[in-house]
Length: 408
Image 1 (cartoon, rainbow, N blue to C red):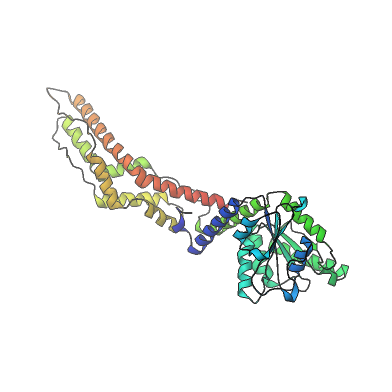
Image 2 (image 1 turned 135 degrees about the horizontal axis):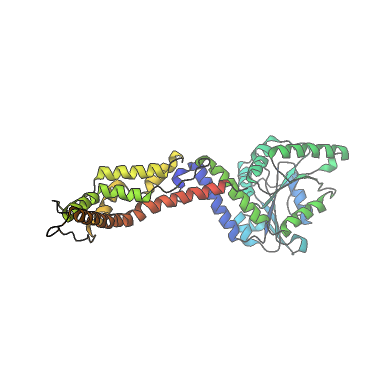
């Protein structure tokens, strides 16, 4: 991402960097704890459900619930570092004795996602991506709420975030009605693309389904992989966001390096010197220049052709990135001339005595090849860090991002 940042849309780039930072922080805190967040709208009964799962009255339910954007937590065993990262106030943390079935669980009671208090919604938006498992709590009267489905369930589906769906307050419905609502909710969830998330029926007042919900949470924590799966889902979602910056089926390759070296050798006068060496060695007139100068226009053209070939098939933004990474033409000229100035050129001697034309031609070709080889070797060493390596790094960044978009 750092190498390819300029090729990514700023909004996507910022979100991907936030995702990377979030994932790094989560992994640094370890995956031996599972963050389970109860999320839902006003009246869904999240706090009552929280208390029922915890087994004590800690979260304040109903109309008495604080209007602040506070998150309540209960953790089975100490989890201060994780709760600091989540931004849970110390006064709103409940630490419970470790139980075998809930070992490592950190349960959160979030503010209402549909609250008129913008701070509440901001808190939900901040914490939901940090959770390893989301328990979406819905009320029978508002289970089809557009805000929940469009702003949260759809996003959870796109991100592949592990989720459970809970239809709460089922004590207010007949058994037949509860089953009918659950079936309709399941269809809506399927439309959102959330797989393997059956609708659970609960009632915090009567205790219906609480043991089953607790069992689902316990099973998720027992796998010790939910946190890692949440991180994977986060990264996959980032990869999908990057798809727009990549070209389908593009596979960038390094252009012909020897062709680049040969072209720069011509631009810098190496070929002219090789021709002069051949002439002198074969008995014809020639002048060996002690100071070779590279043509800026020729070097600029060679550089341009390299960039064109290196970015063939890639989106335009990647051409800009490669162009920025490769040394500009003028300093490239300077580097080429500097390298050629210290070359120990082969000694070229004019033929003495009578020699046949064939012998002189062989000597001329040998002198040309030796001179050309020395010059091209110096140029090859020069372009490696200034042209070839930066291009290869951009290609590798592209391929890495392309692989990320293909994760499933």
